[in-house]
Length: 294
Image (cartoon, rainbow, N blue to C red; front, side, top):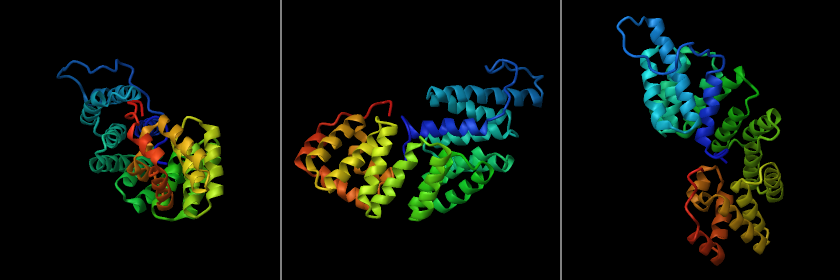
């Protein structure tokens, strides 16, 4: 499980911005860009830059990234000494899937504000996206030393350990995320992914059933349940549940998407077997395109 809610990247972006901008006071003047005057001093420019960051956050809430990005770049020009402007710009680079410049900008923000755990968490997620899992672990651990009970960061840490095939460390991180937030189902889901790879199909199945009790509208645990049931010989039940899952989110009918969401080799192999059945071949052929809201 890499995706969290409607859009993982959008969710992470808001989460990161909330952490990184916690306690930042907005300037008292209007958040709109002021008309040019030659008498603006540096403090006024910085205030204007910080005001722009507030605009950017509001645009992000409505997923208006094309409008947010140029404002974020302008904010770094107006307030280059304020970490908040660089943090927001770096996070928006990640939203655009432009990870390399995002990392460079986030490193600049971190150097300016090493005490800000939110920057480290976002940087760790960026390293993960780039496949630099050891660096992701290092940065996430540093952030968690400052803010230890942050479920999303613990989840990202677990994901990095999972990619490094350090399953005990991954499970520990996921369990800490659940301890911090009992209903944080992505961590529970991924414990199931690990257990399936370890051959603990019954245990993994129970995990995913618990996830569905928490959030019945998630396609991923529903499809995982279907695969596990099919593997256990419960053919018709598995086929029906697979169809139900894909009707929720058709992206899970793509093997590449499942791999991106950290499904392991055994689970992928069993999913391929399920998808190869005549029933599922027809289902996959007629699936509607993913919703724009996903």
